[in-house]
Length: 88
Image (cartoon, one colour):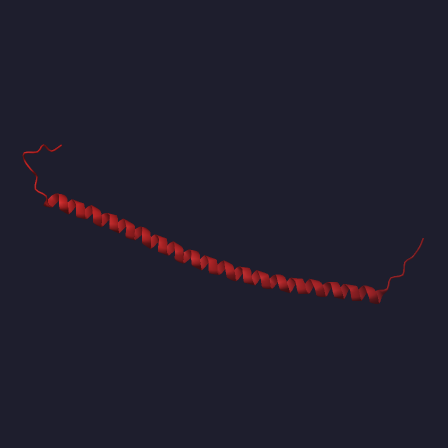
């Protein structure tokens, strides 16, 4: 049976180097996550204001339709009926 000699110092140095690389990658990923979360919050804020604008537009369109309807009703009431003409 052959026994291999383990160089403890070299193994320790390799482990430290690997750990350092993992720490750098972790920190980079944390930065990316923070940036992504910030972008998500900005997008949600923009979506919220867009939803508010669309809701306001829909309310304005409904109000306008109501005003047109009221105007037509007022015009119809103001018009005198010609009694010589049939109703239909």
